[in-house]
Length: 315
Image (tube, rainbow, N blue to C red; front, side, top):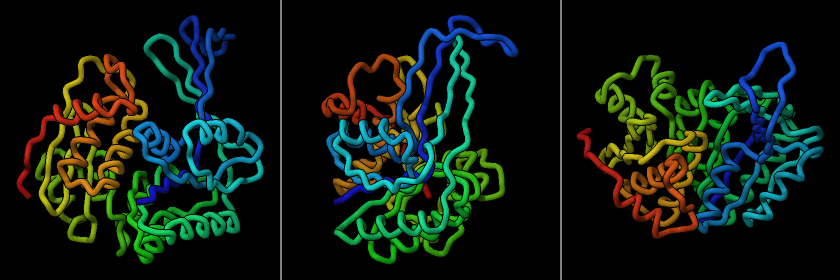
């Protein structure tokens, strides 16, 4: 089954390490700087490639600094179907001093109607080539209406493609409110609460929201809850998945790792338990500072997956 990831608003992540604490209004000396291509869909595709699953990547990318992305696509063996847009892909700057990180996100590209039509054509053509899972991930660039994910979801599902959604804000709300919903979604608890318009404080609150989405046509809902793990809902039931970590490192990329694990489970026809175990294992491998392996080490990842604590929840 083909996997396609869509990243409408990618970024180059620049991490600047300071020798001394950040001093506002003064000259600060950096002791290190790294640049890596990023964006939620690109991250998902990269993790899948490490697991051994190829995918097509598409979205919008700036023509003026595309080289760093093309290098990653070649390294990971990804099928590059990105639409090149005049200008530069945005840079997200992370200033690290000790245990604190200050983020400065620069403005991104603007998406006009012809560019979005080109992207839609590429995406639908990919989905028509055979069985397909499309992952729609991340924030929206300027010029995109908040209904873009909802519209793409309907068109993709009309031609038989499966859709996984991982976004937030109005784009998430509009897609979940639409009559044709994505088959899968991975909001966190606060994002799901924003959709319901009510606080989600108890398990019963989560179940109520999940039932509304499953009744409306979704097949799988994964609600991430940080240190409390995640709850996976489907018509098979509900499972609270949690993996105890030896030592937590950064949580950056944990959500994208979980999405990749869920997609990997779906690509092999896995059931609810498999999605819960593999999604949690991918995320745990990303954030456990004592895990020295990688997603390429299937034995190590499967060992993590088998040790994930699962609790069945009645719906």
